[in-house]
Image 1: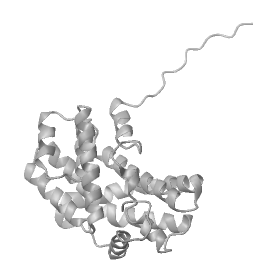
Image 2 (image 1 turned 120 degrees about the vertical axis):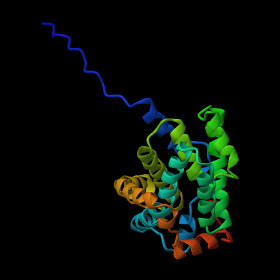
Image 3 (image 1 turned 90 degrees about the horizontal axis):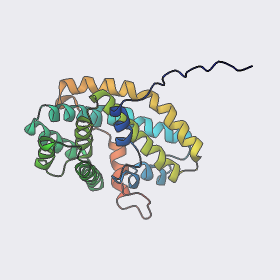
Image 4 (image 1 turned 180 degrees about the vertical axis):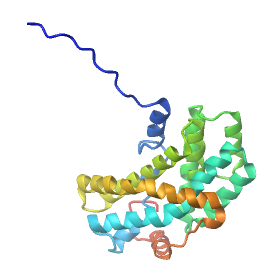
Length: 241
C-alpha cells in the first residue's frame, strides 16, 4: 500500500543580513584576532588561571567589567555616529577608545584588527562611498568602530551587531584558553555556552551607558592592566597580547 506523499513544510531560513552577520563574527575572518589573548596568557603564566573554573571566572570578569562598561558602549556609539555621518563624533570615539588601551600591544591590536577588517570590507565592496570616506578620515581606526561600520553597511541592526561582536570576542577568548590551558575542546565549548547567556544582559548595560555618552564609560581594571603590561616583556609567549 502506497503512503500518501506529504509536502514538507517550508523551512524557516535566516535572512541575508543574519547570514552576513555570521560571516562578520566568524573566527575565520582574516583580521588576526587569533594572535591575541588580551591578557589571558599573562594570567596563565602568573598561575592565576589554571583550569576551567579559573578560566570561566577570568573571562566573565572581562566580559562584565570591561566590555560591558567600555567596548560595548563604544560599539553602540560608533554605530550611531556612522549612521548619522558624524565625523567629529567618530574621531572622538576613536581617540577615546585607543587612549583606553593601557599597553602598546593593546593599542597595536585594535589598530591592526581595525585596519585588516577595513581592508577586507573595502575589497568586498561592503562600504558605499560615504562610509568608505568616513573610515578613511579616521587616523588608524580601532576595531570596534570598524566592526560597527561593517554591520551598518550590511544592514544589520545595532543590537544584533553588538551581540555578534561580543560573541566573537567571547569565542576568541575560549579558543585562546584552549591553546593555553589543559581544558580541552569540550571545556572551552562549555565556557562559551555558559557565558554566552550573559551577552543579552551585557548588551542592555552597554545600551544604558551609551545613552548617557562618553562620561558613563569607564576603564578601571588595574589588575588586568598590570598583567597585560607584564606580558609585553614575558620571556616566552604564544600570543601578541
